[in-house]
Figure 1 (cartoon, rainbow, N blue to C red):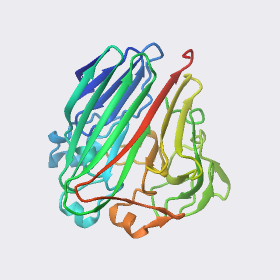
Figure 2 (figure 1 turned 135 degrees about the vertical axis):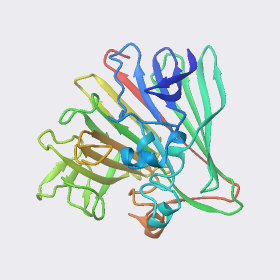
Figure 3 (figure 1 turned 90 degrees about the vertical axis):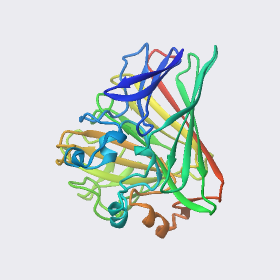
Length: 347
C-alpha cells in the first residue's frame, strides 16, 4: 500500500493504492479522477474529458477560446462544487467568478497522510476566499477493501452565519458509460426536469414533475432515465430527483453488465437530499466539447438545480425540502460519503 505523488494525464496529483484499488486525486480542483480495480479490467468508470486538461493555476485568458472557462479546463471525474452549483451571475462573472464554485478550480494541499498495515488515509484541503470558507477532505481506504470513505468538513472563516450550496458532481464516461447498456439507479422518489432552457436537443420535457425512474419525454412518451437512449444520436438534459425521505441513507448505482463493473455511492440523506441527473450525448458542438462527448453526471447535492447561488436562495424550498444550507459563524459542517466498486469475480 502506498500514497505517492504522480502525474496523471499531464496533471499533478496523488495516487492512493490499498493493494486492491488505485484512486487518483488531482491537486488542481481536488477531483477524484480515476478509480481502478487492480485485478480487474482496469477500467476507469469516471469521465476523462476528450480534451487535455490543465492545472487551474496555469489557466490564462488566452485559454478561454480553447476551453470556454477555467472550470472546463480543469474538470475530471468527480469534482466538488462549493458555494454555488451551476453558473455564476453575470455580475459575478464580471468579477472573474465561474461555474460550480471555487473548490473545483482551487489548488489543494496535503495536510496529513498515513499508511499503516491496515489501511491508508490522506487529508487535503483548499481555501475558498470568495466565500470565506475552507474545505477539508479525509480519504480513507482499508487494506484489500473495494470501498473508499470520504469525510468532508466545511469551515466558515467568517464572523457571520452564511448560506451555501454544495454538490458532489460525479461524472461517468466511456468505456464504462455505454448507451443502452450502462444502467443507473438511485433511492429516488419524486423528480423534476430542469425549469427552462438547459441545452439542445432535449429528450425530456422541461419544468415537469415525474416519479423516478420514468421521465416525461418531449414527444409525450415516458423515458426510462435508468439508461441513455441507444437510438438517440444527440441530446442534453438535466433532471433533479428527491431522495426517499423515509430512508436515513441515500444511494445511487451505476453498472455496466458487459464489463461486469458496478459503482455505488452512499451518503446520509439529510446531507444531500437531491441527485441531479445530467446527460451530455454529443450535443454540445462548441469548444471544448466539439460534439464528441458522451457523459452522464450523477450529482448528489443539497440544492436541486445547477442554476446558481441566487436562485437557490430565492427558491428556498422544493417539495418541502430546503434548497440550501446554513453554516454558523466560525462554524463547521461535516458531511461524508462512501464509494463502493465491484468487478465480477470479487466477493
